[in-house]
Image 1 (cartoon, helix red, strand yellow):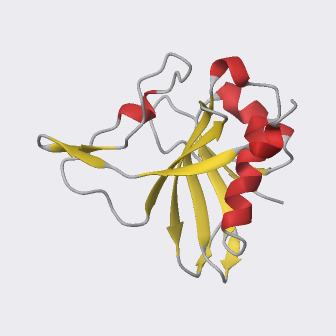
Image 2: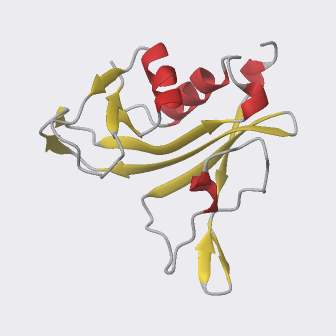
Amino acid sequence: MSGIESLQMVSRTPVRKRRYWTPTYESSSDFQMLWWRDKYESEPPIEDHWVSFVLGDREVARCKYVMTGARADPVLGDLPHGQLDILAFEVAVPMRHKGIGRAAIQAIRDQNPLPRLTALNDGVESRKFWDGIGWIRHEPAHAIFRDVERVTYSEP
């Protein structure tokens, strides 16, 4: 897609609306996942980050991620620089299959060069994306969530 090099990452700050805190995403039929409507009864943790990816004046992708410090993980091994875990990621429906997802993940990596990037995934369609960009799939030993197959991915 021409112009993808002008993709901009914009931080979104949760705002308090009455008694709940919500990320500041505009309502849009281009984004199908319910994650973007999450509400929090108390102020969200400081390690939670919400970002939008914009081309021109159009929002083309969204992401929520958390960062943790250095630690050892039984599946991922030593994480001396911590972990950046992508909890929610979606490209706008009309913008899919144009390289936006790859560019957005690269923008996150460029802004956060040291922690290991991982992604939590529970959808067949989005698994195609993570598999397609060559990330390593870590299958759970047993189902933790009823009727939901959660898979963790990590960058190679």
